[in-house]
Image 1 (cartoon, rainbow, N blue to C red):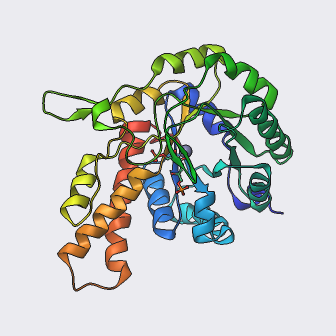
Image 2 (cartoon, rainbow, N blue to C red):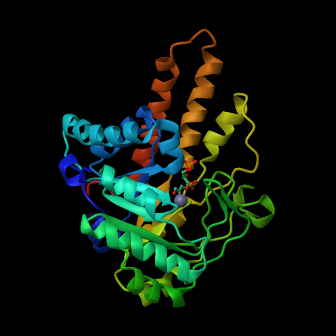
Length: 330
Ligand code: G3H
Ligand code: 13P
Ligand code: ZN
């Protein structure tokens, strides 16, 4: 058993309080490997932003749970070496059950999500409350979820959104004791968030997706004033990456994300954490495909992973400066 405090990590309580008061959101970037971790930390150190390093159960399977935990510990030291002791949270993304959350808490995570959103309400309350009871013994913060996002989360596929019902949130928060709440207001996971037929076209012919349900967000805010809200599925799917990927042998169809203006608006509300994974995947893939095309003679992984890491870092800096507003808040 190792407590995250010994590793130099922080939980999300204080940084969410500041984000709420300062009307910005903390970035939660997923990582599965060293290059992603380096890009996240160097971008956030250079922009002086707090950051949530997010690990899914798929990431634990891919990279090995012990290695990932040590990498997060390394991330704290890496940030210091780069010159800034920024607040770093190590967070379990979409924890499916109590045992997984407990395992992460026991290994040094400072925050966990228990995602009971696919269960009936009472079961969601029950498993979330059980995780909170255990986590709070170690001062680990817990994110719960109400409402279901369309798209794919690990192995679970939901065709349609089930928007969060504002009338449930107060009861859920008080019965479970969660520290933050993920809600469903029209975002979804992955790079294909909307079908073209759901979108309109602007004067330049660019597809514009339907707006997020800010009315639901506002209702939620009224029910639980001051409570930190989380947005999953918040990638914007930059079209320049989609074009680069497709121009260099890729085949991404109908890749449409959440406009950054909508995320900026969300970040200035009670939304204190914004999850971004797919945009990073697109940035890396675009850079790697381009490098392969331009230099077919290269075969040293550093020659293509290096530019991919640089592109990722550029993306993360853009997000914290221009979208989330967390730059300068570390
Ligand atoms: O919400 C899902 C995150 O993007 C993590 O994805 O389960 O494929 O690692 P993953
Ligand atoms: P995206 O797929 O939109 O990046 O969402 C990531 C996420 O919500 C991780 O939990
Ligand atoms: Zn998610």
